[in-house]
Image (cartoon, rainbow, N blue to C red; front, side, top):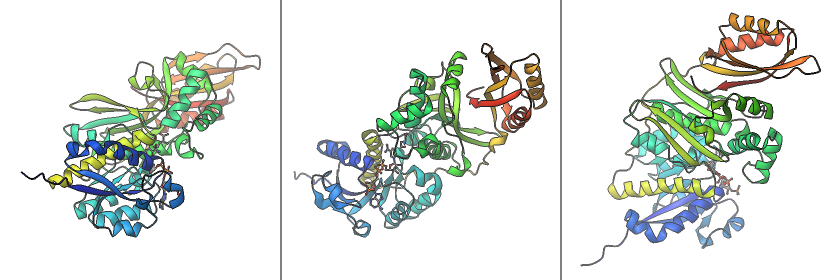
Length: 434
Ligand code: NAP
Ligand code: HSE
């Protein structure tokens, strides 16, 4: 009997930076097994770059390089486009044009998906194409596909976690080596974790984009970047971390999305988390996502949230999924899963426990004055720590509250800021959990 020829699926890479280079390498490393694994061969036919000369050293055959998007778009033999360029423009236009041409798209572009996800899904639906984006959240950790498929039998109540490696590395160094923020950031930059402009990481924007995507997928309702309340880690000090430790907690930049009766809560902020929580032990540049559903109860996903090869692992997983769909004639099987239109809760209505660090006058009656203000705004104190008196007549007081509405906490803090006994509010952090 004649041997059937193995089908070849042609793909194009848009971008050959960190992730693009990883995707190229992973696809090469899978070459010998693809036929058995997928029943097809995946060949990268074209790679879109800006600088042909610079890119030539990264590939075996420089003739695959092009700086013409149109050449890729108009090549009907290319059925999969892998967008790893980043940014909104021209990435958005290229993805939409590829989908309109009936091509399938894989993207790692969280900046784009967190803002224009709906438009991209609509375009994919219109052409019956696949649009997959596993790498956009937590790099190499599988979380989008588990939420859309393995956990589809749940009503998800919460999805939260450490979704930024750079800030987790910085906070780990601050906790383990007593470093201040600026020194830990410098180390992260020297070791290549932080980008030349670290703003998106340290100000929580990168994590905010991932939370928007996670919440949309977990709760079947669109959450965009602007819906997410975002605070970064730039104000965290070694003192905050030391006090947190004394209180049995670590400090992590957490992305939290909760599906409550009165709307979706979505925020990113540095939070105290009990040392006994599994996320408290996720250190260095690792990421982890913790989910809670009505059937599964809780599940945790852990691994490398960024980097050339871990991110490429997720991208290539998506490409292989598409290849299987093409071979089975079932593309577009799982498209947009946002079929609800849930309200987004304002941050001022979210209830949290708080960790507060005050510099106050060291005299009788100060605590009574403070607790009177707290009582006025329904803030209940559950723990107070005061260090030994200082020579300057000031004392540092650290307070942990029970759950209180943000709006009330802010009013109490405004009044305390104006009071004579408080000279400074040096730290305001939320505490994760009930
Ligand atoms: P990168 O290293 O900056 O690579 C981007 C590449 O795309 C560069 O080679 C750049 O070319 C090229 N490019 C940009 N605009 C282009 C254009 N208009 N035409 C042709 N080429 C263009 O970025 P990356 O770290 O690989 O990230 C790529 C995407 O993956 C982003 O969306 C990012 O958010 C996402 N992601 C990254 C990671 C990670 O660990 N790095 C993890 C998860 C997701 P030049 O070199 O000429 O500028
Ligand atoms: N800059 C991100 C991080 C990786 O530090 O986790 C890309 O998502």
